[in-house]
Image 1 (cartoon, helix red, strand yellow):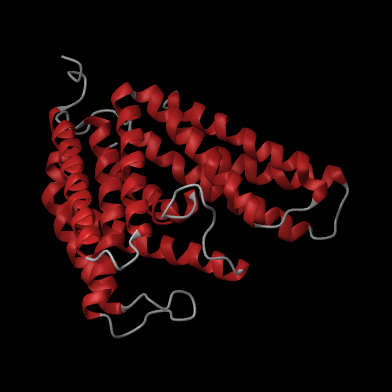
Image 2 (cartoon, helix red, strand yellow):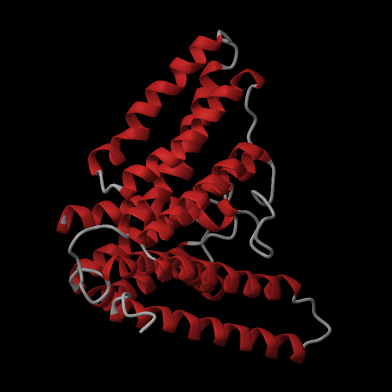
Amino acid sequence: MPFSHIPEHSIYAMITVIIVLITASIIQFIISHKHPDKDYTELRQRTISWWWIIGLLFLFLVMGRTATIFFFAFISFLALKEFLSIVSTRQADRTVVFWAYISIPLQYFWVSEAWYGMFIIFIPVYLFLFIPMRMVLIGETEGFIKAAGVLHWAVMLTVFSVSHIAYLMILPGGNPLAGGIGLVLYLLFLTQFNDVSQYIWGKLLGQHKIIPKVSPNKTWEGFLGGLLTITLTAGFIAPYLTPLTQLQGFAAGVIISTGGFIGDVVISSVKRDLRIKDCGNLIPGHGGILDRMDSLIYTAPLFFHFVYYLYF
């Protein structure tokens, strides 16, 4: 059997996601043909992009742990490149930026070796101390604090946070019917579903804005509606895709929904500070990598350490 190495529940989850995508594509097709006078270009682009995103993700998941780790390392590379393209860095720090990129293969090597101790301290401790030291050797002091802060934050967001997704693949034990793939699918599905849920509830009931200066469309109704939806969903599917009990799944839902909201508005604050609409244009209909990964930047480490604390 070509997929015999994939745990049973993970196969069911992947099939479910594909069914959802097919349904969304049919709905998009019907809406576009029912209202030909309206422009649904962005909706069509978003749907096509989701097919590519899910297709690539599933391809690497099916290929195994090493391929999946490589995939997320490449995502970190694209995200770091995109982040450094929208923020200003000093010309003198070109060699320091090089070391920021070198942190990607090193961080994911620790993941591949399941070396948790080095994985968890390499960027927050060693790279944190190394970057300013390397900047000092350049001898340029003007803008030193800002430059160090930008590079530290860039690597933490795009490399350290994202690498937690890859590490979910190699956690020992867990749920034998879902494996590491189940944990990855659980996190990714709930994080993206949270964005959709908060958007829908906000459109239906939104009246009271949370932080209008950062994200005018975010409302308390949208946030709480999404929180309730994701909490219930997370609790229901947790025993199938994770080692979590249903009660622990409810807690994971609260973590993912709240973390996803914070990640979204944090990246929104970055874009407002830079006066840009999107972080890039790599993904048609979605913007850049960071526009699609904003919620995951927060949910990945929070969910990982929640599961790791309880079971590993």
